[in-house]
Image 1 (cartoon, rainbow, N blue to C red):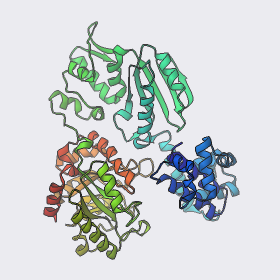
Image 2 (cartoon, rainbow, N blue to C red; image 1 turned 30 degrees about the vertical axis):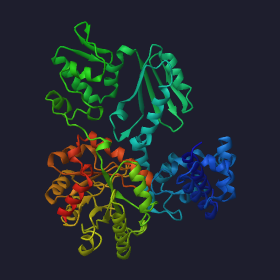
Image 3 (cartoon, rainbow, N blue to C red; image 1 turned 45 degrees about the vertical axis):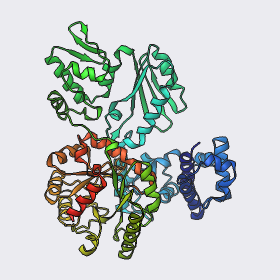
Image 4 (cartoon, one colour; image 1 turned 120 degrees about the vertical axis):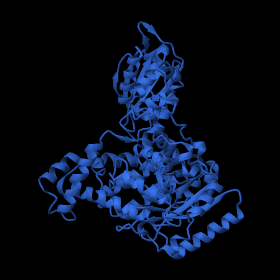
Length: 571
């Protein structure tokens, strides 16, 4: 059992305790314990063995005993007892935005509500109007929250299940009957929201391979099992479809089951003009099957360049492939450094030194530190004195470390009127300024568009952070006219961020191609609040590829010297 699972168990205990109305000291002890475990650098199993787990700050005797039991037995009796004492539907109620454990517990105690369906019915009967701590506005927000849950039910963000798909493929590769195996479907195309995990394998013994999947520890429930397809639900709640084909059908099937539906339809239409029939079993010229050895051969047989999976959305990729004009997509190795990094000066976990060391391990040559500005009080936004102190610290670091460079920036809040946090005489002292919206989300549509454009007219703004403010499966964002925003970025020489956090992935890939056409530079930023999140950059790379971006389109693919020269010229 790894520290991530243990941290999750401790956090769930805190939620259970809060739902049961336990005192806040006990709740916070488990919340703090969960955070301590999650941020541990060492091997937690080793710390249990040598007894050092009991010496950790924030881990008292009770929590230490809990962790020891989890490590040594793989289970925790206290956790199971608490879990069984909570109606299962009550945890689902907590998914409603803005409805925390205290209010959920109140609904359960006073109105006996223990499921989303019961809560929805209670709202329709206006039973929350007179309930202490609620009222008309609360009831309206809860109804909206329930509609939101229904809308996204059975969907997952790419970042949440990508690793699960990779792990399943790695496990299936260990099955001796598997000849080839790959992720397929929307996950292979790097769609930001996916419904399930599609996996394709080839084998002479498909039933053996499907039995292998069913018996994996992660497979919690078998949904269906046939001769060529098996569906299971993982313990995480994600459904998996495994298809097994004959080895000589594998690459035809891999193209077919990668999709998208629109791409496949267009490919069949193209094949028809060449008098070729295409399906998951092969390419056929009359009765003769066209032999291929990989997907490149598949596209070559249809007179096309190889089309990478992430581009297969029928958004011009087939026409470009026919003309030999597909872009050479950006790779992780092209990224020289990253911006939008938070430290413990504001709401980040790690200090400057820790962030730099991790960045070096990731292969980066520079970092752009941008803690929150003073308006973001909730995030420990920097007062002017703190700005000066941080600037001095970064300056001293750069003097002592010629092999790595730190740019001093800020994430400045964009106010409702489009002005930036801090006066211009402060903004001009930063190496770069990321400007983002963190409040006033009710300002939507054209008003939001003008708010962003006004911000970009500030001469000290370098980048526009998370342009729509969306949280995947959580918040729609403020819905600006992105074409107008991109046009304004071009006019004002502003870089647009592709926020690589798997919870954002904003700017949306559908608009990256437009930004590329307009010549607007994109910076792939992890929005890291702890050192581990520097690696979220890879999710941004995947979305950049899906948006047709090349190395030349990416600001942080520039060398440190080129970035310094650019920022100096921009100022």
